[in-house]
Length: 235
Ligand code: ATP
Image 1 (cartoon, rainbow, N blue to C red):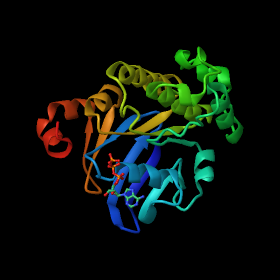
Image 2 (spheres, rainbow, N blue to C red):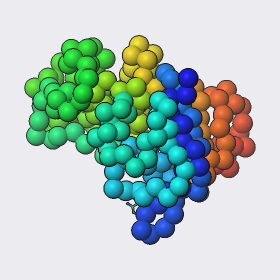
Image 3 (tube, rainbow, N blue to C red):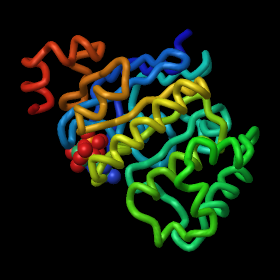
């Protein structure tokens, strides 16, 4: 079943239009990446799905579980089952691991319990009282994903989850995302510039260039197609 169906999405800012008809489908339980160079419009696409003041949606439809999402407030979109982990991670720096996750639980309609969440993050489980501000970038990224998982979503939107992290942490977060997807049957749409990490974790890939989807390919097709990688991704 198609869980998320973005069709002809047009969106932009006061400074101008950025998306010119984006089509993305995510099936229930699927792990999909949205790839593209700097400024292609990847973050704009995720923000349009997650709702909020920016960007302005100018056209197209965003269907989720058979209902239209665009125009809904971010809390309504979250309560329908979409968790968004923005690039800047947004953990509360002066709160502990447990307090950060509890806040997410308190804001969710049908949350998971904290022990279920922490099972996926043994590293966090060992630093329950540590404040987010004293944690490494990789630990903070884990905490941001833990907070998103606590809301018990059907779809997780992850904006560059591997950015700025050391290779061994990238591997670890790839594993966590794959485990959550697999064991909790949560669909994932992740935005990446790190093509290797996206290929390692996602089953299917959309490539965005200048606000349009120019290719949609399986992992095997993306691996095989050097021309696509060169032209749109520079790798
Ligand atoms: P990046 O990897 O750099 O985040 P991206 O593919 O996610 O790239 P977006 O962040 O969606 O790209 O940006 C697409 C375009 O929209 C860029 O030209 C950017 O300057 C512009 N843009 C992004 N956010 C805003 C904003 N808040 N106001 C005005 N323009 C913006």
